[in-house]
Length: 242
Picture: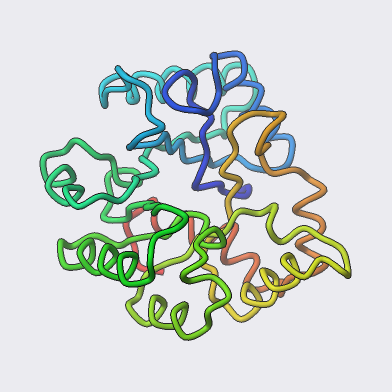
């Protein structure tokens, strides 16, 4: 059983991620070479989505990419589908109408906010999703100035039972990298439930690498790292609670 990556933009020509099928397959191969065999394709739902990226097209491309990846790389590779959902006021209605993808059809939803959103708007959005019966996972939590490094606000979100995802590259840094040190600190306090690549291309926001994963093994609490990289993703793919 390999590592799982729940936040990727490997699907080609549907958003600002992979531009063609060759790039998609190169990204999948790069991930597999790093020990990742479970990948959730999470194209944007929102301003960064390309026109024509219908649910039918996304399903077709997931099937296509998994088939080719299993033929050319390894039969163990599993590709799942969801959206990275840009939060807006009508998102609950669109979820209920089936216009937005949750992660593998479960109640888990990967949700992002505007970087400059206020804490009150982020909190209200997460509560709205929960009241509607969904289980929000906040995408790249390190980006939100209203929450990150504000312990009281971070705790309020965690107290809701919301899950937090952090991009792997944010934890990578040397002794004098204060940002990376802070990210590792809150990770080791068990406040981050998922690590993911948020990869877009091989030369920009790349897939997870062997070097990154080896660094994490040295710097992060081993038991929690194993849960975050292996156990938690597979639980949500099955719709189970963490």
